Image (cartoon, rainbow, N blue to C red; front, side):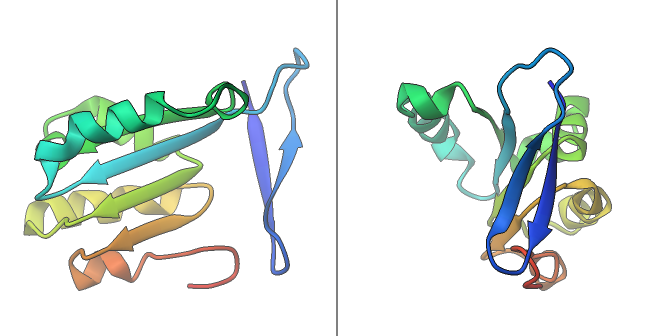
Amino acid sequence: VTTSFNYDDDNGIEHDNDNDDGGEDTVNIVLTTGFESFNRDLYQKAGQLLPPPLSSHIHLQVFADSDIRSSSEFATAVQNADLFIGSLIFDYDDVMAVSELLPHVKGPRLLFECATELMAFNKVGSFN
């Protein structure tokens, strides 16, 4: 499934369905929990509780800070993300690794309670 997103100042994200097969749009969301990695299972379960109309359009991948530098799956997920959410990422090496990947995120980047260097990547629509 290939989905492209256009951003405008008024509405944020507009979906353009570029699927050759006429399939549904899917939004790839990457959620990365830093020092709260003990909540990873909780976040995954919450993603599974999305109502059916949403669950068929959202692909949620949840990672912990331990995955940032040890998992090639993490890098691939961020490079293909339409939305990135990061929380409590402070370790210097993790911050550097995530900083290199964030420019690849196609849509909003929400980083809160992270190192200042990462919070500079916050972006929603035209707001940086």
